[in-house]
Length: 124
Image (cartoon, rainbow, N blue to C red):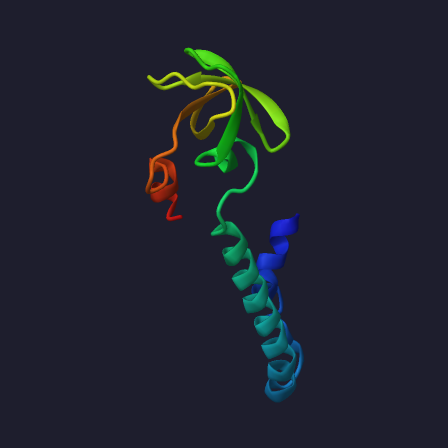
């Protein structure tokens, strides 16, 4: 039902059969303008970067609150998550980067000097 608004210019075409051309055009052009504005807003919203859910967590930093060897716990955005290290051991108090997700466990790696690989991929 909500997709019908995308067809508004098509639904408005019969005004050209009902009214004289000049009147129909003056009614139709604002409808097309409003439709183009809506299309622009929809396109812009669809191109935004993901900011919620697991995808929004990738590349973000967390604080180790329980040693990770190979599993432990981190704090990210005031939440405590189970975490698994990708090869390294992390001690309580270290900062790590979230690089993946396996079930409800976050995969973490060390913070690199130039930023994480995930941040570089995302264009940060």
